[in-house]
Length: 427
Image (spheres, rainbow, N blue to C red):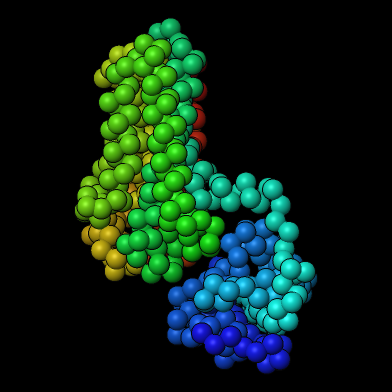
């Protein structure tokens, strides 16, 4: 790319418009020359985050947009990124775009400054933002999917056997560590396969991965290092549990690590094999975790623990399932033929209903059979959350408003897991 001369650069202005999610709608000639992208490369295919350093996106951009929406404009100076990776200082002016008096997006006008101004306008990144970036890279908020099955198993054991806090805590840390490895492997292999690169309709942060590589927060090698470190922590936890008298947890932990790896890693890449990925998630985040956690504390395999993991495993699969809706078009192009791609989004709505129905039905059946105490039915208070998300899915499965159901399903899984653990514990 030919970099504009200092004199011409200061006369150029980049004018870019985007929708409320940052997806590019217009990209003028000045933007093409300043940033180095052709309009055809980015309109409808990229978001405004492409033009700023990742940490700036996390720390500053939300505040810029909020100011523009609330006051009518934002003006400031910052560092921006060209297609070739080079950075340059510029003035930025952001105003809201409206239609019929309703805001529909933003217009950003960027005017380059002399390169000598780079150090002066470089945003100072706070420690909080750096720590937050670690949460983004590892997708830590989604760790509830592995934490709640362990909490449920812990509550179950606490009512039936001598409870070992050291073993339980090691199981909790080990499960979360394997989950972190799964998240980072998932991001790395989805990026390498092209699934994330061609996905322009994701619901950040609920689908489409963390976008950490795209934002420049980390490299593929960095993701692999995090995954390796997380697996090492999980292995150490397994050794600790074995030393406490529960060696049976080691092969279960190995199965969990293999599940994390094979979900998106070639050659198996189970998520691309028409239902095997969804099945794997249901087992790994349900029966496997609950059996492993009970075994860690008691030293033995409990068949009831496997049944106990089914409801929360199905709800975790429901999170994956509904997050596959916005990703389906790009996943199909990338050969990621999960079930939502295979059967189509319209029919897949009924798959979501089946997951939710069987999850709640299994809970009722476990109580009816006497496997767990009736107080476990406390988790039924989350049923309205399930109904609401299902209603939104059926109405909005083709629109951006579906994101409310994506969020609702995550809340449902967490609330169900928490209330189930509480219900078992108070029995």
